[in-house]
Length: 218
Image (spheres, rainbow, N blue to C red):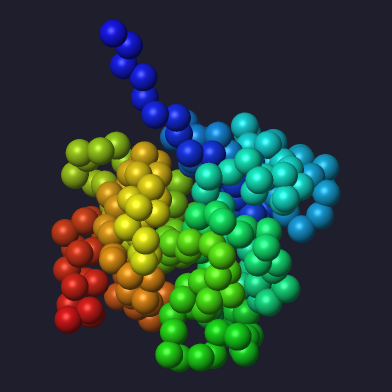
């Protein structure tokens, strides 16, 4: 009797700046099939991909998304206003972006304080399922702080979303790349991951992370 593992979800990373290649690299090292794209031709990022995310296939965005089960949105937030929602329609989208006016300037779309930034992303990507993670960890730390399961030094990453199945799938990715996933049961709770939130920029183990978000949510 064979013990066949379920095939890993295929991941497309949209964005080849600071964050995208790091996520691509750690996902590849965790055994995932990863493609990556930027705003232009794949040839323009072929060299940077070869150096920063070896094993990731540079593609046109539409090609990368079409074949993916999970799409990582790692573009500068100020470019989201011109992002085409139909590109990711029907897809599970990980939102890694932050609204931080000192960096991006005031973005009118994200000034509605009734919503967290990923809720606003979800409103625009109405045909997609948005999950928030990675945004509260510095890209330069994401690779360095990975640890195997069971390590006393293993850190936590939060995963927030309205769809439990999508949150579970993304949490599995988080666990495989080397972090303990802490699930939050709504996308609105992802506000706790944003700049000024209790876990933004922090390096916490699971218990400490859970306490931090629980106190704020109470």
